[in-house]
Image (cartoon, rainbow, N blue to C red):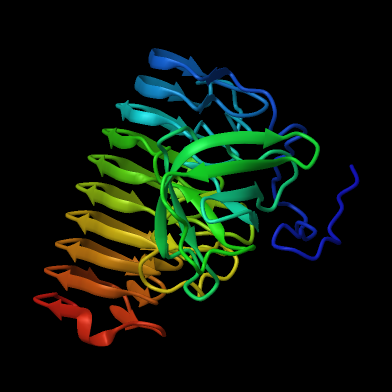
Length: 383
């Protein structure tokens, strides 16, 4: 077998040492076990997915999805090391609610779930005071198309990904030749709106509730939350190479939107997560770019609560918070964090209260870009 290791990016490989085992994924994306597009009231219950060359469940532009007792897992006795070669579940541009209860996600080649509003788009041209032409961000093809009445957030390069205005869609038309959308708005656009500004759809975001689920032994991340309104509770995470829960968005790598608001992470247990060298550094992570998340200011992510969780063992940070405004880190137990147990940067209005830290060298680091007067630390044990 010939292995190519000469790439000069974050996917660059290296020759494995003699005696190590490797997994070869001949097919990663493209074939799903179940795929739903523009559907309403999707219900999946008591389904097992043992192996798939792609993702397990993919849902696009749909409303109200209920998933209970879904098991994406390695078939018992098979001796396999991997179930789906990519994500177990993936949701884009959905609305209403996404509910997942008592599910098992094991041995995937990518994330357990990724919930996002779609992809960030770019202002290609300001046509007049009410119309913009909009193109896709990093990839070819048509940009994500909003619906009439959708709220689009506009942000510029002065405060990366922090919206300076929200506008309401009145009409949408397509320019097939140039692969752009012509979007008209109800109200007059701000004077500052110009070519190159970033556009995110704040309406294509379902309320997300994940309860009683287990994520174990997978490559990449556990739950990726890129939406508005989410609760993750009573779940168990173990042996995940990267972040167990990530609130990540960016306009440099994947262009997946949108900044996370109103997220509650409570009563979960994390064991040996974020153990492999990777660009994301926290078991629970909030950032703006997996590659270099030090640029976006506070306010991309808002109103995050991390409460009553147990985090045991990690080669990085137990909790890493960046580009956030309004974070409560309350009554968590953190044990054996190799790096700082809690790392905060580019953030404000953070409360760190009642947490207990054991077997870790550094409890808290307040990094660059923080409004230190708004970060409150009290009644913690171990730091």
